[in-house]
Length: 271
Image (cartoon, rainbow, N blue to C red; front, side, top):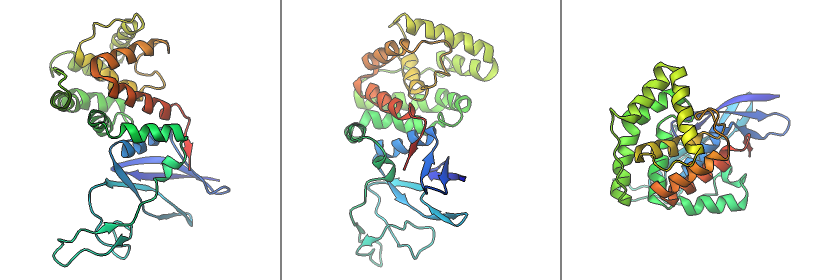
């Protein structure tokens, strides 16, 4: 029998299932990408146990890797990872942590992909892109996320990229991004026309896209493994999009998209 489980990853609740026969936990595809975000952003996954129908399962909770752990399992609601030593009375003595095991979800991946994750997570631009991607709710609710991307995430990301990588990205709130967002929210048919037109340009290898268009496509591309955003776009046309992303935004973003694509291409992963 399979049980539905809400799995806590950061501030996200993701559906997974537990098989009573094998005792294995199976995550939905979306959880894969969010769990990957934890690795890319240098967050450690701490195990907290909870009981569901008498069986103990392990949901994941993230914390920044550089934040010391305070308290022990005897303090409800606090991290249960046992520290070596203790925190002094005045809170000035940082707890030293015992070596943490590799996150469980990483153990389910092939060695090559694990090596890729370890390499790409050190890149500041990749971290900036993925921070905005995962904070946008794009993996959960594409319609809401597009509004968030247009109004909030992309302007912030443009500023961060401009400072960190010297790339000039002008994200005009009343320009192309707002129009695209409004089409998606107000007129689905018009949205399909707009995205199909964009898909045609990508299929022709059109490199005349504005930087903000390319950046938006890069973020959407990371979650568009089922080709829902660009209706009618042939799989081969995505190589043109990836090339434009790589040229305009740099190889790190292309690398990130490849990683997310490889993860999302799986039906699910099992630990």
